[in-house]
Structures are given as C-alpha cells and as structure tokens.
Length: 111
Image (cartoon, rainbow, N blue to C red; front, side, top):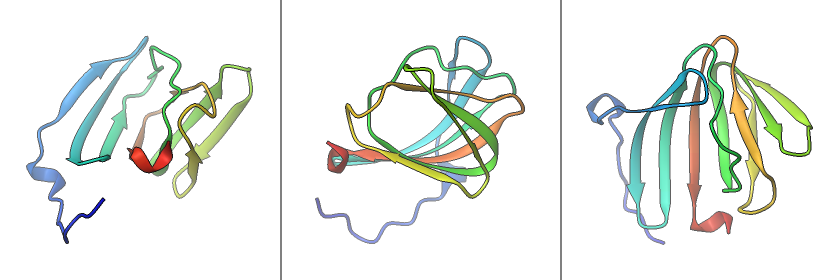
C-alpha cells in the first residue's frame, strides 16, 4: 500500500449518521485502497447495534466509552487512550454514557 502525502480537512467531508441500538453515531470517513480513517462521534447514550469482529485502532479524542467483549469483559477508555485489535481476534461493541469522539483506523494491515 502506497499513500502519497495527503492532508485531510475533516470539516470538508460529509457527515454520515447511523442509529445504534440506542443513540446514534456520526462519522466522517477518508478511504484509501486497503485503509479507512474515520472521526466518529457517539451521542450520549449510544450503544452499538451489533458485535464487531473487525480489526481497528481506536483512539479516544474526547469523552469516554466502554468496549464490551462478547465474553462479558469490559474495557473503559477515556480521552488519550487507545486500543488495537486485529480482524477476528475479538467480538466487541461500544457504548457511551455521555458521548465520545474517536479516531478509528482500520484496513488490510489488521488481517
């Protein structure tokens, strides 16, 4: 994968919204071949509507959230914290009480 020097003006990207099982997520997405970079905001009370097995690098920019494993294990992340997981290495979903803003990077390199 080769990506030339690229500036991302997040303010110029379209906002895509999606309802969760409660609350909503809003994201701005920049895609390259084999790589996706997103700024994602979860509304207060957001709960994901599915278990995800995709790999991610998730960095909390503001607020806090919980990443719950299908096994029942829970991890609380707040601003400045990051988690990394490869494809198929966990079944996880996110929720937040007060809202959060995340930088999420995923792509072929996490297979």
